[in-house]
Image 1 (cartoon, one colour):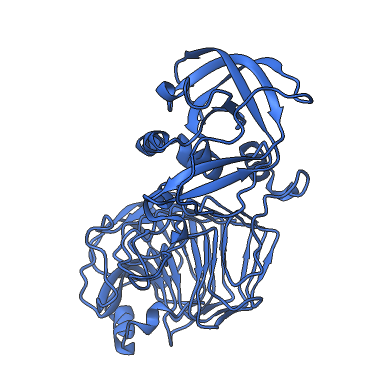
Image 2 (cartoon, rainbow over the protein chains, first blue to last red; image 1 turned 60 degrees about the horizontal axis):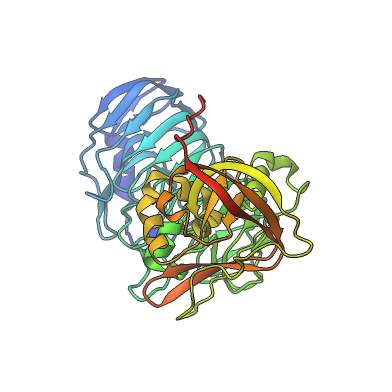
Length: 185
Length: 288
């Protein structure tokens, strides 16, 4: 849908692949507590408690807290909160940053779901990132999620098609976009 | 239905000289084509819906959304009217479709889909929203556009007494003393604690005050701000005679040092000649 931001940011392909390979490999997982390296899920997963994200920015491009690693799966938030390390506007990403944090990423994915209720908040750039230029995603469903106080947009879609976003709340995002055109979605 | 509230910063601009912020509630940027944006609530953002330029934001349908209160009154006061709009549209004229949105302000090549606050019975699928709008604009006020006048008095034109055809009724009303212009633009902002300093500044510049009842009706005092000014933001009970005024009234808000924004009420309004006035305790919140 939007490629505006991606025109400013070059994201090498191998870093995206590295993100999928190097992250913790998880299948059908109950998730809670602190995540200190990208958690990549390969099966239906759900939060069983609140999550604190402390993923260091070590990879060029997005450094997600949780990444979808397979198609046709869902992540249920079960009313819990995923909290990143930033309180905007302090510490927010600037457009020239090559590495940046996001909450949940679905890149190169088809038919995945993020199901609320639940909250995604306080990330360097986006609470939710769907697709990247050259790495399209499709048939993404985001439902009943509250995306709150992230530095850039609450949810960013890039090269994303045939997707549905329903009953979500995007509030107080883009408080530290540093000139980038951002907002709720 | 998605909800977009309070997103964006007024200081984020595509260039230092840009009049508007490039932040928004919901944005279509870059290559954004053939999207359906339907039945969303979008309020209190710097821009409500933002359509980017470049000629590749086309074929989108934006319909049956409630896009109101963008930008917040505080942002308008601080940064001026051009900082944002309910719909900020940089796409070529006619390349996207706006249908049945509820909105007040539009900036773009047009044709403008705003203002459009609907009529009773038109919002069957959005009853709560429709009720909110109708209560808020109970006098069928319409914000036409921002009008800049370098030197004009801030008090409403239409302070006065009943005239033939305007039969006074004795009533007692209970509500909060608010600055009327802000209230009509953004109810939630005007009623918030964080707005108190802003409203005091507006009062100092002569912005008209009114009593906003719990059901959203505004009563404008016949004697201007004189009796209400010491009760700004307080909950009051006032009794007196009320008349329905039918002549247009303009509420004027200072914008910066030299400009002002004018809200023109054309559908009539209620004017109260206050006989007794007392401060009462704040209303208790109802349990959710």
